[in-house]
Length: 225
Ligand SMILES: *Cc1c(COP(=O)(O)O)cnc(C)c1O
Image (cartoon, rainbow, N blue to C red):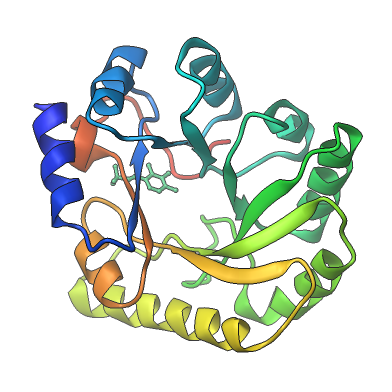
């Protein structure tokens, strides 16, 4: 598996306005360094401990994206280390992020994760719960929501498109409104197997792991935080 070739080829194929987050979960520091040398600066991790360990041993200009489900008791470790948390999924988590980031006078940049397929196995809020969450976001001082994230249900090209379109509609709806602390800049959707469709349907940030670093031989859960 040639990481350098994979990532250069992938980045070249992307439209200019699409950000590539290289998902390095379970992969060693050396693999990240190879990608870094090609100019890659955005990396994604789904476990807090792993993100902090890697952050400590690597260059400081890496933008770390937290993409896993986040337990409230681990929020404090991310303060000052993380560029963007993709997995804001409850009011309880929002309140914890607000309190931990404000303690250190830091701003948390967040995406609201939407459980667009209403799958029990996935985290994220339902579309119907958005308004309640938004009300809480508006009264925060240290939280800024920059957009939305989704992990869509497994399926075929047609179902993928269906869920990506649904996300784009929600994103466009929110873009038209004006809320305190909320701006729609990032629509994070698309992974190794479906990022091309995601981009066609309006994604401007894709999260690609295996397509860059090769297969993960550990159980690389989507949920573990
Ligand atoms: C692991 C993971 C990815 C990357 O998946 P690949 O299929 O390896 O591209 C993207 N997003 C999330 C939330 C993940 O946990």
